[in-house]
Amino acid sequence: MSLVKRISNIFKAKANDIVEKMEDPEDTLNYSLVEMRENLSKIKKSMLDVATLKKKLENELSDINIKISEYEKNAELALESGREDLAKASIQNKNDLIEKKTNLESQIKSIEEQLKNIEKSKEQMEDNLIKLQSKKEELITMKKVSDAQVMIKETLTGIANDTTDLGERIRNAEEKIKEKYAKSQAIDYMVDAGMLDNILDDEDNVEKELKEIEKQKRAEEEFEELKKRVAAKNQAIKE
Image (cartoon, rainbow, N blue to C red):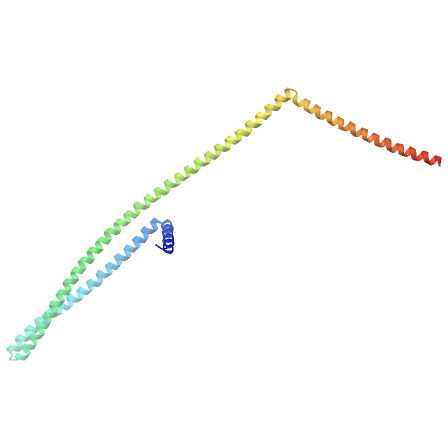
């Protein structure tokens, strides 16, 4: 098998799968019912056409029988009147009509057989139509029940997933609360043990030392500035 043909078959298979998924069983059954009703209507029309033809041939056969009877009388009357030629002509016409009558009777018989077959087909289709209608209602009911079951299962599955997620969220929240509680207990313990006070005191001492250094630095700067001014003043006096 060529690569192109294999690819074509794959696309056809996928397309058929998509079409099958898109088809609604109820729509398919409704279409089948409509199609069967249309076919039944066509059969009834065919029956009417064939029955009309049969009736037409029967009327024609009736006319032929009347004419055959007339030709028989005419032949007898002509012979009694000494007109053998007319008698022979009437007999010939009668025989022609008898042949035509035989053909008509054969056609009518054939049509009667056709009508019987059409009637059987009609009855069979009517029976199938009733069965399909009943089957449709049964399948639609089954489909509704199946859809409801699927919806319930999907809902229950969703609830189960939500419950799982909720349980996970509760566990996470519980862990965080426990962690904060443990931290709070640790702080209380450190406060009771004076551990936090020492830390705070150390921080205060450092701060005090830094401030003291800053003060000393400013004092030295002021002292140096004062020395410069005094020196400048003494220099001015000497001059």
